[in-house]
Length: 335
Image (cartoon, helix red, strand yellow):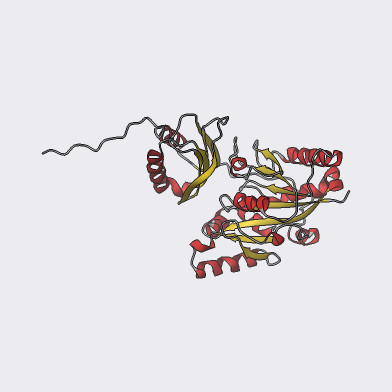
């Protein structure tokens, strides 16, 4: 059997990886895709944000970062997928690995050259990196992982380009080219991009990587900044949308600079669909997701990733957003 091409989809927190992955899963490109996705923290949200009416195999890895603590799990999952494909239990011809936004892509790519079983079945096709045009300048200044994601990319896709000025976009493009002159730079607006620029491009060049990272095949160490942490808020009772919007708006105003990524799937009173909520720093938005089915457990789950976040304040504030049927009345004015 021919080697199975693998695309590593990376990019810093909130850059639009899951949005692009949804487009890949829905597009008419003729591929049957197996997806391996990894999120930073104890629980994942992205699987609930992916399209569900597909034949793709989706495997979640939520017990650590794919570039360090769960690399052994990645090898195991890749080998299990290959074995099921060979036995006819699964049919797929391409694998997409969506990394956590805090992943260094180098150790992930390294897996395809240092593990013999993986080498027998897979070919690393390309590293595709999403770059958030709004927040990338700050992310590149502050985070080594963001620099590595750009430096190792075979394709760079700019997201949120409609939210920045032409001058800022030009400056960012020039900076990306200085970091990585060999990667083609394109745009991905609302996750829409040319699939031919993402899949089966044979973009990964080991010799080029060894020129910029001579220890690529031997260096396996990677550590995250200790002050970047995550936590999950869960609630089984329905939330009051008005209370929730008011609380989150105030939270972002006070702590937005520290909130690197926050997202959730919410059970809102009076809504027959999930409310999908996402944000990066000061940018926040929501949309309707899939409809709740009668057999579904209606609950809410939100993930927060950031620096020095006031966890107790956030959890208490969200708990106060549970629907009670009551509204705070404005204080009556004296006659």
